[in-house]
Image 1 (tube, helix red, strand yellow):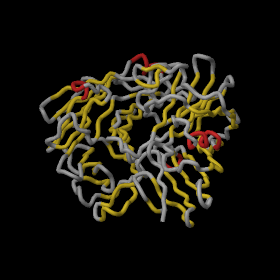
Image 2 (tube, rainbow, N blue to C red; image 1 turned 90 degrees about the horizontal axis):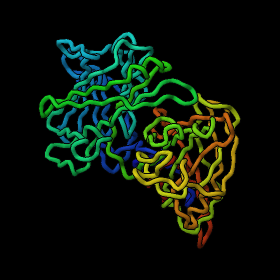
Image 3 (cartoon, rainbow, N blue to C red; image 1 turned 30 degrees about the vertical axis):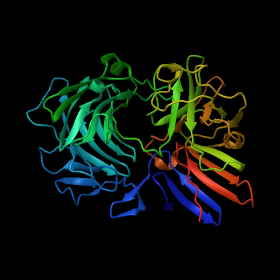
Image 4 (cartoon, rainbow, N blue to C red; image 1 turned 90 degrees about the vertical axis):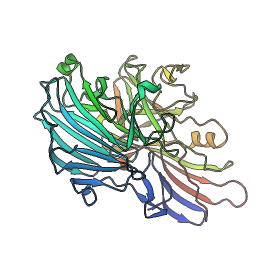
Length: 446
């Protein structure tokens, strides 16, 4: 595999026939020692060699991360900017109104591909998951805790933290900038508002906890996440709380989302699941996925286009997926059942889509689902506006969950494989493998 961009890797090359695999989100970065070379983003925390006050570190990434401090008073997560001397840090402070004299050092449990995990108390684990485009801070509650609130402290040095609510972007609550930057510049990353969900198989109960940020000094912030006690009483455990760190999107990154009739104004663009579901008119779930096809030449003949999804542990076997074209522009972090953009409704709730569609049987759980998209991709190449695929299921009682581009398992992202013949001159077949995303198909010519 030869990385050729932030999201693309060349798998095969035979003259003008290529096979390229493209990720939804960034998988590769420029080698700091050789800027002409692409290297894979590091996701397994290695033993620390640079940040020696910590046990583990991540260096081959847009951010430098250090985990598991060796000294008691150090923050248990350190985030560094490799292009400056900026640093951001995170401590765990306590539960409810209990505040110990010193910050708590959680018990280190494990590290693995894409994660480090600690135990906060007898009911709660804290897991940091490393992807190319985000650092997910996942709080896993195994049974009903005695607390309803968690408290953290955030700090910065030689860098900036700005409350997004004060500059018109409340969904990005703390924005991280390099020193000397303006809030009008693009942040390096931000701490998004948290979400929480339980373990119900068909329709996890997703909620937005109260999220309180309190400035202590110009360099320190207290962050409190408060959950509704009644929701905690009735949830199916384990419960997951996700106050994620999101990196500034790259131009080559994709978009996918599920939209829910049961929560018609709730955005699920950052969830780890895509889904199709029909459990009655008030519990439909649809999925939208958009691929950028700008590198496929106009006039090309599409020989084959296959959409690959990975069906996870939730689903009714052998149900059918209905696939069609989305017919209106939408944004990943704004799309809902009712709206394609914030304040801009779909003409039809659940997503505007073409009337031409086909149905494909799904597979068993923990298997891939392959859907034929040849005719739709040909339409896009011929000039029909490309707003992505629309997936649904109209058969009562059927449901399935699929990995989204935000799932930790990068190998099972949505993928589109396109086999096409170039138009004009000599027709030579070319095969491009792609993973869902915006602006990410690369045509390779040598």
